[in-house]
Image (cartoon, rainbow, N blue to C red; front, side, top):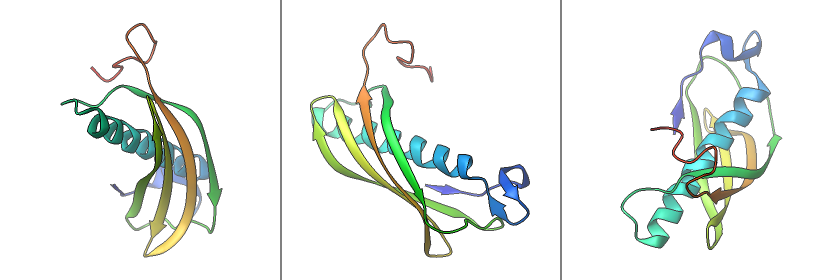
Length: 116
């Protein structure tokens, strides 16, 4: 995923806010998990997934004024759960990394198909 930050995403002039970075990693990890669970199940649409846990490491200041690249990689899948590794880079440099556990939820869960 590519993200082009706006001025309001800065913590201070020239640097992106850590909360924005965490949100980008969480969201992209969640979608990586949903797509991986869909592929594994053979379904035609991704399941609705939620974040069970995630952690991030801010490795270096993330600069404003350039596109950010966020990648997700499946570590493991166990039934309705996917463990995902995430990475955010700017200008080819790793600025943040993270890992998360994302779980598919069923009808009746408050987040079930929240984007419809």
